[in-house]
Length: 359
Image (tube, rainbow, N blue to C red; front, side, top):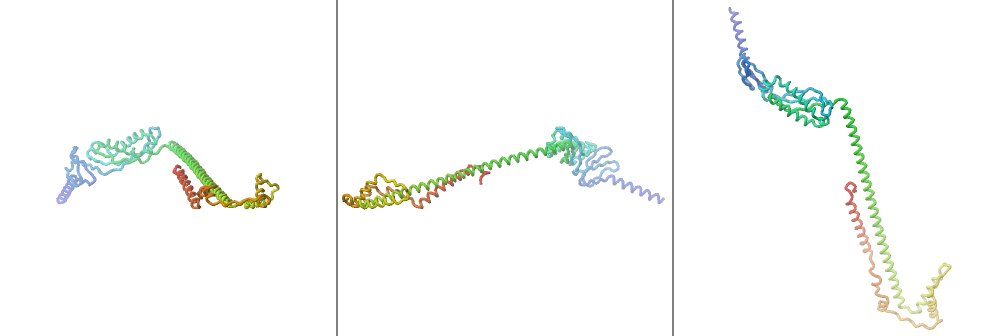
């Protein structure tokens, strides 16, 4: 009798534990739960401790955290008939537990299958080169399409990332050949452009060299001509001064002095090493003067000395005849001005050259 009471008491305790356990549901902070009673939806249970009807309830917990799901690799034919193997990763999150449970059997499997078909559809509308260069655009397009279709399931697609785009082996070989040809083409273009720029720079250098050489020759000729001009002027002025001095000196000499100078002149002429001597016709007049001086002719009256005013009246003002004689400082200043003008012309020529050939 006592044993039976103990067993009955234990049974009631066990039943009570089961009763309490089935009536108390604890939902984690990252979850929400679907509460159904006798096959009918009651409400969504939030995080924490929830009391439900014992024994006749059904509670399904749904994780609200972001889930990472792998889209299996699949072969897709692109718009330009190039077979490629493509796989991706999707990030999803349940936003409405009720729809995620009642609107679709398995929202995870459904989302993955939808991602596969959508990926195949998007890739099939693009060419291979566009796929390889526009992954970001593909990711955005896939995300928008999947999010729109999964919204009725209470699932939000947060992001889609293409993991790998692997063309078929033959396509890879063709791409490698195309890349190699493109690189060779670019190398040929760069080499041709380099030769072109080199030829242009060389031509510009020769042009500049010829310009500078011509400018140097011009400047040299100008300076040489200027030197000859100054030398001619100075020589002419010196000759004029000599003649002026002679005229001034001769103005004070009488006929006897002129006869003596004539004798010295004949002596100098006959003193040369030449085998022939040319005597001008006017030498007879010279001989007459000598004979008069020596006493063989009549007596010649002395010539009066000519004064300065008479010389100016007969010959002219010496300053007007000789002209201005440039000093050494005048010549140096004029030469410096020529050099300055030549340098200015060279700088003007350099300013007209292209920037990439300027020194």
